[in-house]
Length: 114
Length: 114
Image (cartoon, rainbow over all chains, first blue to last red; front, side, top):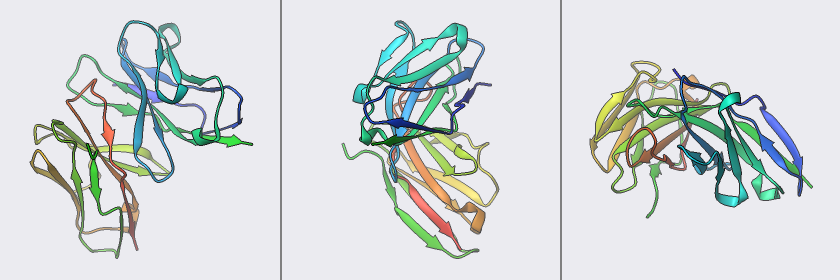
């Protein structure tokens, strides 16, 4: 079965600084990979997804993620963080070969300091 | 499109009472998911449907929990009897299909059982 690890529960970044959120997965082959964001009091919203092809994926709100097969990672990045990016971020994996659904990580809470 | 609609947005009830949560998926979506989110356990998948048929309910915590999808535009999650440990935010999500399809989340129902 697939699993997802987000090693950082909380991260604090200064506004304008760069951001990298870590995601590691466990799966026998290349899974489908997703990043979702949850603002306070809201549901989850898709930021970006990777199925195949170019390992650098661009998403909404200026986010990008890079799939690294050798490290079983799919880290989320943003070059300059805005205060409105403060939210909880979830990495998720899907099984391309099965009739199944997504497995979510525990989430990373991003705090943005002035 | 209005997105995934959930009602009520907030529910406060007393232990032992029946609670019914409602979800209207995005029109045209064939898959529907119920999740529970708590601080302790994160985001948990409870049950999901495809074409109105329950596919996997292994995430349903106890027999007190039941879910139905009588048609393509409506689903309910029922807890009977409710207990304080059921207090959580319950999310409904829908997608065009299973697997690699993006899931669109509703705003959630915040349930408090006293």
